[in-house]
Image (cartoon, rainbow, N blue to C red):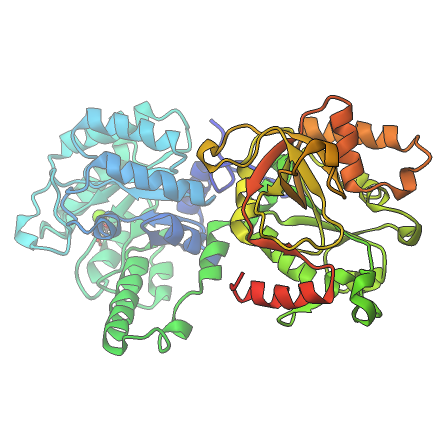
Length: 559
Ligand code: SPV
Ligand code: MG
């Protein structure tokens, strides 16, 4: 059975070598070690992760803490499968051994067999069972009602567990409650011997006294016949050197993660309640980024880069090579796309609109004063020949940026967010946005669109195709259906069609002067379908000084 390194999903791309020993073998080694070893309680995935990150070699999956984090009592109120479900998260989140506090084994020998099987399936390294009766009561509650299990019956449970484990290293720790129940040292030793003979890998001797005397007495008498495990919750003030001297193998710090989190949650909740503000507590608690780090957000980001098909990510290509001569001296030291509206460059507004719609791969095709755009920090493609060439040459300079899902747009556009959103959701190999509003003042040069149907709002979503685009009204074609706003969407088929069309047009003598409408008309002439997505206003392009004033109003929501 493979023992995943961490985080549920073994990452074979990681350079780090997996640990050589399985988790169960490492728990075995902790128990057998000549050194005094320590494990710390955890009760869910994140606390388990913290225990591992701190440097502990193992985790105690405490019954008290697990039941407490569920908000129930430590009296087998949480079912064993609920415990197993949580253990699965803990195991997935970590790579160090987990020793489960298995209470009484949740039933008889048969339940124990099934428990061991399920724990092994989840890479849990071992289980500790205690010689009490189901449903158990926490050892620190009501000492008089701590009836002990029959020794033979408990030995049968240990044997059944050992016989059913498939992994030789899986550990079964037998916990003796004789001292807790007040039966004395002799009974504790009698039970220890029986459990050892039954095959237990270690003995956990428990005490609720505030001094370690009875534990030390047991350890001395036992004389390391097999490893001894202790839980010094009540005799916490005992110096650790005492345990070392007594030859204890493993100390379990049994409930300190749940107790510290309860303390912290109580104090923070009270403070928030009292102050009705977060200002006072922000610096006292873990940052959200810290949570992300514990959750392994970085690993997911790397996996996304690796596995999410980059070809399916929508790419925006923004044509921004021109100076914008009609804007005179305003574009003397910068390209049109860097003109500011309300202090924000046009291109920045455009890129922000793309980001709003989760289009983060944006390439700006620059030419005039390209260095000004470079400073703005986008992906750049440069048409060095911008002065003597048209839009198509600019677009072709970004051929290596083409993807199977693209938006191509002019860089001087302002538009309401829904226009891009709806375009992204539209279907068709090539879809252009056409404004059917009649009242829009025409700026220079208009791209009149002649379509298969007029924009009839009643036919909303009906398929409309483009027949032609023209800079001037075509007298023989009647009134245009609207204006192309300078934005189109392309899928994989459309991309192939555009690439082929560019290759064809490159053979024409006038190629260097061709525009995007020329490309679109060439596609139509070749029998390709260009779909139309109608809008009604809510956009403008910036070609003139007058447009700049309108743009200022537009960005204030007045248009
Ligand atoms: C637990 O952590 O659930 C234990 C140890 O069983 S104790 O609470 O000390 O009994
Ligand atoms: Mg317990």
